[in-house]
Length: 155
Image (cartoon, rainbow, N blue to C red; front, side, top):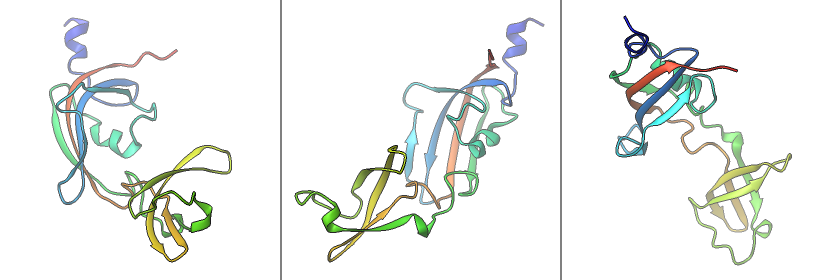
């Protein structure tokens, strides 16, 4: 058997580089993201581009395989954490900023890193901002088609 034919049956696992098409959908079936109509994505298992729960769902799949997996919040984007909703005074924002529920804003955290937050509610002079990941608390339907799996090159 040639190295190429061995490689074509290599399963997804540690130390592999994977090329795939994928889509993410919420419980109601609404699609959050998909590359099935575009260029495939490539990642190395463990490189941080895919959350571990999503990577592990792919383990054992070989090129040509397709799968649909339900990723629970604990394996995906985490549970919705009520303590990640913070209260701000309306005075903390520019007066001309049109605040409305659903508006995504960028904040600086203690280390001056960018932290996205979504306006959750407005009550008089109080602005409630949700810093949970937008997909936190959701079971995600992860659909994939594996296009290629090759050994990753480590240096």
